Image 1 (cartoon, one colour):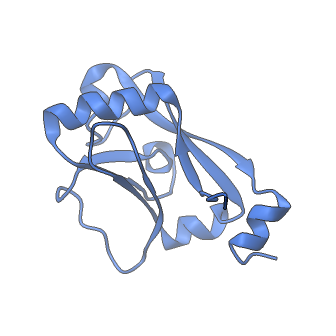
Image 2 (spheres, helix red, strand yellow; image 1 turned 45 degrees about the vertical axis):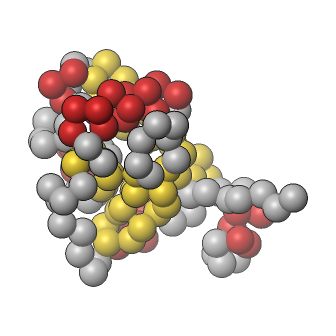
Length: 127
């Protein structure tokens, strides 16, 4: 059996929030643009509300029980800084700004990261 390596995953709390948000908003996606302040937080949008461009990188697709797959994008310039890391989208108390759909819930998504291990670096062509 072959192990699927992923660049991005979710905590159980983030997955539960996505289930709630999808019930209210339909299919969802994430985008992380970079920059300072909330620009470095993953923003969650209903599919079609945010237009992904040619300079965005698809990091992966998150599978969450009961909802459509959630695609995760990052701006190419931000990806250059993060390409050697594994990202986990988590959910914490607090209200971020911007148009991310979890903001009215009193929660916000954030990125937790770790360096890719040797097997991941090789699988992603970074050695």
